[in-house]
Amino acid sequence: MKTDVFWTDTFQPTEPIRTVGDLPSSVDVAIVGSGYTGLNCARVLAKAGRSVAVIDQHSIGWGASSRNGGMATPGLKQDIFKIKKTYGLDLAREFWKSSVDAIDLLEQIIMEEGIDCHWSRCGHMSLAYKQSHFDDLVDYIEWLDKEFGHKKKLITKSQLKSEIGTDAYFGGNTDELSGGLQPAKYVFGLARAVTDHGAILCENSQVTSIQKESNGFEVMTNQGTIMAKEVVIATNGYTDMLIPKLKPKVFP
Image (cartoon, rainbow, N blue to C red; front, top):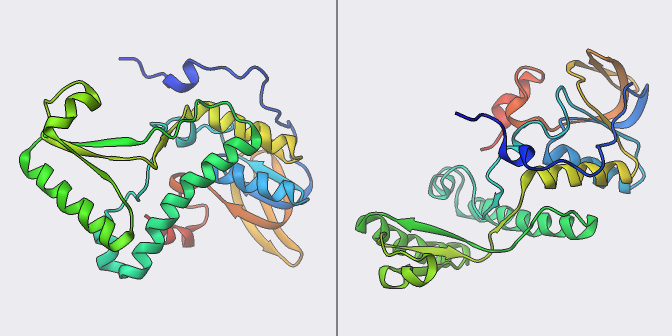
Protein backbone atom coordinates (compact mmCIF):
# COMPACT_ATOMS: atom_id res chain seq x y z
CA MET A 1 0.00 0.00 0.00
CA LYS A 2 1.28 3.43 -0.93
CA THR A 3 1.30 5.87 1.99
CA ASP A 4 2.80 8.93 0.26
CA VAL A 5 0.59 12.02 0.07
CA PHE A 6 -0.72 12.31 -3.50
CA TRP A 7 -0.96 16.10 -3.47
CA THR A 8 2.64 16.72 -2.42
CA ASP A 9 3.94 13.68 -4.30
CA THR A 10 2.68 15.09 -7.61
CA PHE A 11 3.58 18.73 -7.05
CA GLN A 12 6.77 20.57 -6.21
CA PRO A 13 6.83 24.38 -5.88
CA THR A 14 8.77 26.14 -8.64
CA GLU A 15 10.40 28.16 -5.85
CA PRO A 16 11.05 26.82 -2.34
CA ILE A 17 9.09 28.34 0.52
CA ARG A 18 11.17 31.09 2.09
CA THR A 19 11.75 30.06 5.70
CA VAL A 20 14.27 31.30 8.27
CA GLY A 21 16.81 29.22 10.17
CA ASP A 22 16.80 31.29 13.35
CA LEU A 23 13.82 32.59 15.28
CA PRO A 24 13.51 36.38 15.50
CA SER A 25 14.02 37.73 19.01
CA SER A 26 10.67 39.52 19.05
CA VAL A 27 7.59 40.17 16.91
CA ASP A 28 4.23 41.83 17.25
CA VAL A 29 2.40 38.52 16.75
CA ALA A 30 3.61 34.93 17.01
CA ILE A 31 1.34 32.42 15.28
CA VAL A 32 1.65 28.77 16.28
CA GLY A 33 0.64 26.51 13.40
CA SER A 34 1.18 26.87 9.65
CA GLY A 35 -2.04 25.46 8.26
CA TYR A 36 -4.69 27.47 6.45
CA THR A 37 -5.76 29.33 9.60
CA GLY A 38 -2.28 30.29 10.75
CA LEU A 39 -1.05 31.28 7.31
CA ASN A 40 -4.05 33.41 6.44
CA CYS A 41 -3.93 35.08 9.85
CA ALA A 42 -0.28 35.92 9.15
CA ARG A 43 -1.17 37.21 5.67
CA VAL A 44 -3.84 39.57 6.99
CA LEU A 45 -1.70 40.86 9.87
CA ALA A 46 1.40 41.34 7.71
CA LYS A 47 -0.64 43.28 5.14
CA ALA A 48 -1.77 45.53 8.01
CA GLY A 49 1.86 46.28 8.91
CA ARG A 50 2.36 44.00 11.90
CA SER A 51 5.59 42.02 12.34
CA VAL A 52 4.59 38.34 12.32
CA ALA A 53 6.31 34.99 12.82
CA VAL A 54 4.59 31.70 11.98
CA ILE A 55 6.03 28.84 14.04
CA ASP A 56 5.49 25.16 13.21
CA GLN A 57 6.94 22.01 14.73
CA HIS A 58 7.01 20.42 11.26
CA SER A 59 7.36 21.80 7.73
CA ILE A 60 4.97 24.49 6.51
CA GLY A 61 1.51 23.05 5.83
CA TRP A 62 2.58 19.59 7.05
CA GLY A 63 -0.75 18.67 8.63
CA ALA A 64 -4.27 18.39 7.27
CA SER A 65 -3.95 21.56 5.18
CA SER A 66 -1.87 19.71 2.56
CA ARG A 67 -3.49 16.31 3.18
CA ASN A 68 -7.22 16.69 2.66
CA GLY A 69 -9.71 15.94 -0.09
CA GLY A 70 -9.56 19.43 -1.58
CA MET A 71 -13.32 19.92 -1.25
CA ALA A 72 -14.84 23.19 -0.03
CA THR A 73 -18.49 22.55 0.79
CA PRO A 74 -21.16 24.29 2.88
CA GLY A 75 -21.89 22.83 6.29
CA LEU A 76 -20.00 21.73 9.36
CA LYS A 77 -18.46 18.49 10.54
CA GLN A 78 -21.15 18.26 13.21
CA ASP A 79 -24.65 17.52 11.94
CA ILE A 80 -26.63 20.74 11.43
CA PHE A 81 -29.73 19.19 13.06
CA LYS A 82 -27.70 18.50 16.21
CA ILE A 83 -26.30 22.04 16.17
CA LYS A 84 -29.85 23.44 15.92
CA LYS A 85 -31.03 21.22 18.79
CA THR A 86 -28.06 22.15 20.99
CA TYR A 87 -27.68 25.87 20.25
CA GLY A 88 -31.00 26.94 18.76
CA LEU A 89 -32.03 27.96 15.26
CA ASP A 90 -30.54 31.47 15.26
CA LEU A 91 -27.04 30.29 16.18
CA ALA A 92 -27.34 27.32 13.82
CA ARG A 93 -28.08 29.78 11.01
CA GLU A 94 -24.96 31.77 11.92
CA PHE A 95 -22.84 28.62 11.89
CA TRP A 96 -24.23 27.62 8.50
CA LYS A 97 -23.73 31.08 7.03
CA SER A 98 -20.12 31.11 8.25
CA SER A 99 -19.48 27.88 6.34
CA VAL A 100 -20.83 29.43 3.14
CA ASP A 101 -18.92 32.67 3.73
CA ALA A 102 -15.74 30.64 4.21
CA ILE A 103 -15.96 29.37 0.63
CA ASP A 104 -16.39 32.91 -0.67
CA LEU A 105 -13.39 34.02 1.41
CA LEU A 106 -11.31 31.14 0.09
CA GLU A 107 -12.09 32.18 -3.48
CA GLN A 108 -11.30 35.82 -2.65
CA ILE A 109 -7.87 34.92 -1.20
CA ILE A 110 -7.01 32.79 -4.24
CA MET A 111 -7.92 35.64 -6.60
CA GLU A 112 -6.19 38.36 -4.55
CA GLU A 113 -2.92 36.47 -4.20
CA GLY A 114 -2.93 34.84 -7.64
CA ILE A 115 -2.61 31.33 -6.19
CA ASP A 116 -2.52 28.59 -8.84
CA CYS A 117 -4.25 25.69 -7.10
CA HIS A 118 -6.77 24.47 -9.72
CA TRP A 119 -9.63 26.20 -7.89
CA SER A 120 -13.01 25.53 -9.47
CA ARG A 121 -16.47 26.52 -8.21
CA CYS A 122 -17.74 23.26 -9.65
CA GLY A 123 -20.39 22.32 -7.10
CA HIS A 124 -20.74 18.89 -5.53
CA MET A 125 -23.22 16.03 -5.54
CA SER A 126 -24.50 13.80 -2.74
CA LEU A 127 -25.96 10.44 -3.79
CA ALA A 128 -28.54 8.10 -2.27
CA TYR A 129 -27.88 4.38 -2.52
CA LYS A 130 -31.22 3.41 -0.94
CA GLN A 131 -34.74 4.68 -1.57
CA SER A 132 -35.02 5.66 2.09
CA HIS A 133 -31.85 7.77 1.72
CA PHE A 134 -33.38 9.59 -1.24
CA ASP A 135 -36.58 10.23 0.73
CA ASP A 136 -34.45 11.71 3.53
CA LEU A 137 -32.63 13.91 0.99
CA VAL A 138 -35.95 15.30 -0.24
CA ASP A 139 -36.95 16.24 3.32
CA TYR A 140 -33.47 17.67 4.03
CA ILE A 141 -33.47 19.90 0.94
CA GLU A 142 -36.90 21.30 1.83
CA TRP A 143 -35.89 21.88 5.46
CA LEU A 144 -32.60 23.55 4.50
CA ASP A 145 -34.36 25.94 2.13
CA LYS A 146 -37.08 26.77 4.66
CA GLU A 147 -34.87 27.27 7.73
CA PHE A 148 -31.59 28.52 6.20
CA GLY A 149 -32.54 29.84 2.77
CA HIS A 150 -29.95 27.48 1.28
CA LYS A 151 -30.98 25.90 -2.00
CA LYS A 152 -29.85 22.53 -3.28
CA LYS A 153 -31.01 20.94 -6.52
CA LEU A 154 -32.75 17.58 -6.28
CA ILE A 155 -31.61 14.98 -8.83
CA THR A 156 -34.03 12.12 -9.46
CA LYS A 157 -32.97 8.64 -10.52
CA SER A 158 -34.04 9.32 -14.11
CA GLN A 159 -31.84 12.45 -14.21
CA LEU A 160 -28.71 10.78 -12.84
CA LYS A 161 -27.50 9.35 -16.15
CA SER A 162 -27.01 12.79 -17.67
CA GLU A 163 -25.23 14.01 -14.52
CA ILE A 164 -22.77 11.20 -13.74
CA GLY A 165 -23.21 8.62 -16.49
CA THR A 166 -24.97 6.01 -14.37
CA ASP A 167 -28.36 5.41 -12.77
CA ALA A 168 -27.04 2.95 -10.20
CA TYR A 169 -28.19 5.23 -7.37
CA PHE A 170 -31.68 6.25 -6.31
CA GLY A 171 -31.03 9.95 -6.84
CA GLY A 172 -29.18 12.74 -5.12
CA ASN A 173 -28.70 16.48 -4.83
CA THR A 174 -26.23 19.08 -6.03
CA ASP A 175 -24.93 22.19 -4.29
CA GLU A 176 -23.58 24.77 -6.73
CA LEU A 177 -21.81 26.81 -4.03
CA SER A 178 -19.16 24.13 -3.46
CA GLY A 179 -15.69 24.15 -4.97
CA GLY A 180 -12.54 22.10 -5.25
CA LEU A 181 -8.79 22.70 -5.30
CA GLN A 182 -5.37 21.07 -5.03
CA PRO A 183 -4.74 21.54 -1.29
CA ALA A 184 -0.93 21.34 -1.36
CA LYS A 185 -0.72 23.94 -4.13
CA TYR A 186 -3.05 26.18 -2.14
CA VAL A 187 -1.12 25.93 1.14
CA PHE A 188 2.22 26.52 -0.60
CA GLY A 189 0.74 29.45 -2.53
CA LEU A 190 -0.62 30.88 0.71
CA ALA A 191 2.82 30.51 2.33
CA ARG A 192 4.38 32.39 -0.60
CA ALA A 193 1.84 35.19 -0.15
CA VAL A 194 2.64 35.35 3.57
CA THR A 195 6.36 35.90 2.95
CA ASP A 196 5.63 38.31 0.09
CA HIS A 197 3.79 40.48 2.62
CA GLY A 198 6.74 40.38 5.03
CA ALA A 199 5.88 37.70 7.59
CA ILE A 200 8.47 35.15 8.74
CA LEU A 201 8.02 31.36 8.50
CA CYS A 202 9.83 29.18 11.05
CA GLU A 203 9.80 25.42 10.43
CA ASN A 204 10.82 22.55 12.75
CA SER A 205 10.31 24.76 15.79
CA GLN A 206 8.19 22.99 18.39
CA VAL A 207 6.58 25.30 20.92
CA THR A 208 7.11 23.84 24.39
CA SER A 209 5.48 26.52 26.52
CA ILE A 210 3.95 29.98 26.42
CA GLN A 211 4.33 32.29 29.41
CA LYS A 212 2.47 35.56 29.97
CA GLU A 213 4.84 38.42 30.79
CA SER A 214 4.22 42.07 31.63
CA ASN A 215 5.11 43.15 28.08
CA GLY A 216 3.51 40.30 26.17
CA PHE A 217 4.27 36.59 25.87
CA GLU A 218 7.42 34.50 26.01
CA VAL A 219 7.12 31.69 23.47
CA MET A 220 9.62 28.93 24.17
CA THR A 221 10.55 26.42 21.45
CA ASN A 222 13.15 23.73 20.88
CA GLN A 223 14.96 26.29 18.70
CA GLY A 224 14.98 29.15 21.18
CA THR A 225 12.69 31.79 22.64
CA ILE A 226 10.72 34.54 20.96
CA MET A 227 8.92 37.46 22.60
CA ALA A 228 5.55 38.46 21.16
CA LYS A 229 3.03 41.13 22.05
CA GLU A 230 0.26 38.72 21.06
CA VAL A 231 0.03 34.99 20.31
CA VAL A 232 -2.37 33.15 18.01
CA ILE A 233 -2.82 29.40 18.52
CA ALA A 234 -3.78 27.92 15.13
CA THR A 235 -3.05 24.24 15.76
CA ASN A 236 -6.58 22.75 15.74
CA GLY A 237 -6.27 18.97 16.05
CA TYR A 238 -2.57 19.21 16.94
CA THR A 239 -3.06 21.43 19.98
CA ASP A 240 -2.41 18.53 22.41
CA MET A 241 -1.73 19.89 25.90
CA LEU A 242 0.14 23.05 24.90
CA ILE A 243 -2.82 25.13 26.05
CA PRO A 244 -5.01 22.78 28.15
CA LYS A 245 -7.77 25.39 28.50
CA LEU A 246 -8.27 25.37 24.72
CA LYS A 247 -9.10 21.68 24.43
CA PRO A 248 -12.79 21.92 25.44
CA LYS A 249 -13.24 25.05 23.33
CA VAL A 250 -12.40 23.57 19.91
CA PHE A 251 -15.57 23.34 17.80
CA PRO A 252 -16.79 21.17 16.23
